[in-house]
Amino acid sequence: MSKVYKKTSGNGALTLYLGKRDYVDHVQNVDPIEGVVKIDPADLGGKKVFVQLACAFRYGREDLDVIGLSFRKDIWFKHLQLYPAADHKPTLTPMHDCLLKKAGEQGHAFTFDIPVNLPCSVTLQPGPDDAGKACGVDFEVKTYISDVADPEEKLDKKDTARLIVRKIQFAPDATGAPGPKADICKSFMMSDKPVHLEASLDKELYYHGDPINVNVKVKNETTKTVTKIKVTVDQTTDVVLYSADKYTKTVLCQEFGETIDANSTFDKSLTIIPLLADNKEKRGLALDGRLKDEDTNLASNTIMRDGMDKEVLGILVSYKIKVNLMVSSGGLLGGLTASDVQVELPLILMNPKPQGKQPYLLYVFCESPERMLPLRLSTFPQQKKDEEGGTAKFNRAKLLMAVQIERLMTKAKKKLEYLIGRTINKK
Image (cartoon, rainbow, N blue to C red; front, side, top):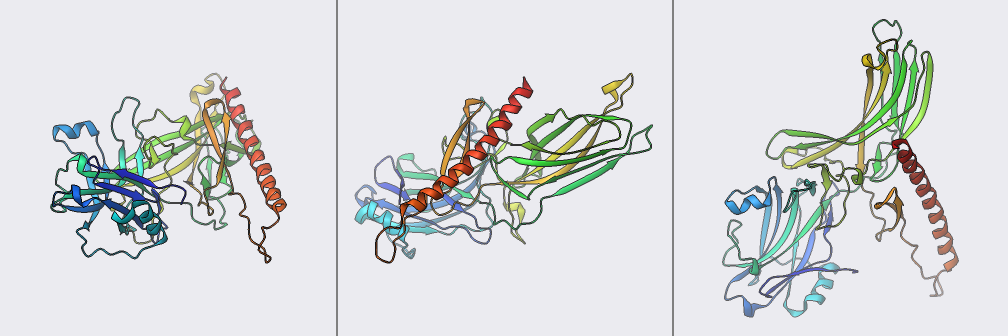
């Protein structure tokens, strides 16, 4: 195990150990939380020790809690008694064994099974002047000293140790299905022929940070001129836990100076990349759950299994792409009488499944040092033992790595060309 997460209570009597903080929702099941608590009985004062997993939704500012207004709602929680030993006796796993070695003889193992119907970790981006914990859905593992397991009891901070964990979803396996397509045929006043617009995506699912090619086909049979094409990406956040509120925020709005004359056609792929880096100031934008100040990305689409009650999912996130043709009527009024021809496409944004070990990341500067795009590189090939017991030839591993780097740099070049083009257009 490369890293162990631990937190010690203020009085030193409890130390919470976890082997990881990200737990994957596979739709049909969720990774269990396996941990260990080191307990010093001499500092308990005759009290018991419990460990609790809670899923909660925070929908208000943390500083208002101190005046008696609680803006945190527990969606689900479960507690276990660890000391004195009760009926919780988990089957020990390799994760437990590793953590017990860290904790020593005073370690007590525990396991939490996360229900599949709970929401994934989502953070609503705070505004520039907001203080305290961000709103959203989070999971917390907490061990504490008390006489009884009462979730309403106000515990002394020195008697608790807690760690925030994340429940996350990765992109499902590619199905090979074609991407979404939409088309529209719109007629205008004083014109007996229409404008045909068709937009499509190459695939149905994209990873955060990957370029998205929006294929646009236009057949302009009118006497009007299409002056430009505007592509926007909207994030819709559906807060279903305590209300029926839906919030839509634009995470990308990009205009392409493509002119389509009367009685002509157009067929081109327009490349966009929706990034959190372009939306740092937007309050209320949904992000994948954040741990402390670690970087994150735009929230992934919510994937629901059949029969799941969405009311307990807290926050549902979805995306759509809008393609707009700005059509000018020409004449003396010019753009004053311009109108839109628009289609919408559903977009799925998610994180890829890790392949074995965490892949290497190559960071490329884009536009400014504050904006760095992560480009994924597969894990370095493992050395395998051959039949004679020696290591496999290292040359093949180096060749594979060289091929991966070449592909990676090609991808980086495309991203840089795209972003440089955007910068020039803005100027």
